[in-house]
Length: 386
Image 1 (tube, helix red, strand yellow):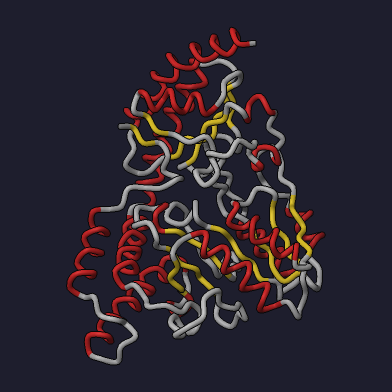
Image 2 (spheres, helix red, strand yellow; image 1 turned 180 degrees about the horizontal axis):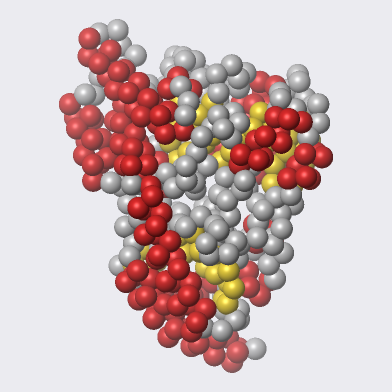
């Protein structure tokens, strides 16, 4: 099997799975308990938060464990809206966000909030001058995706954070870092990020794990109320097994970051150059090969339907995606590629190849070989149907 759909999910590290199993079986105590065992279990969670905090340059008490990216994004948006509604009801985001950001914003719009949507250029970058011009006194939140989940375009977060805080220091800066955490260096202080969302299963932690970094002093309201766990911000019995498995994957990802990024870039280059040198009428959707997230390559194949190509590759045991896995079964065209001005004939044939550090150049070359046999055949069939 060749698995090139790692933006959808990744294989859990054996070490993380083993840690999770051991904690579930041997250290199953409630961390909210005042007993000795409860306190020991609570310490496991605290140490996990410290491991994550060290990576992004924050205090461990600014780390809140979640179930993943969707919860984290929803919390950032709804929690900020509820906590800061008296200060204003204006929010800024981009047209290329993940649905976990866009859908909550639609709900807020129906409740009287005003949302400004930043346009992007043909590579997926926002216009920072446009961002600056849109920030107002009543702008309570700016939410901008760090690395796009469909194209791999990485925004200039340090410059964006600086512009936001220079124009209005009270505006909250949130980033959906689901596709960048574990793959990019992130310093929340340097980037002036107030809230960051990450999801464990995107970097080899178990599904159902994630965290939000939330800067101390924010008035963000909880989504869930109850026993007051996680400093009153996310009630519900804490899961030390998930926290420790997540922290293990975080440490592993960042200890190997440079080597991982270099090896993944080799895979990406081998795949793209193999495609472009052998198959006509193809294009990269997004930034050029060396300037985007190494882990994502979105290719448009003209005169092919992406779902047909996807299933043809499956027949050869090669797994890719026709866009975001969260909405790849829907028939509508990608809002991300439309916002970038990609023409419909290339959008309809767009495939997202996404990699992990465990992929190889050999796999990329086998994928190229498969594409070279499949694409011409599918194009002939497509032409016959016209």
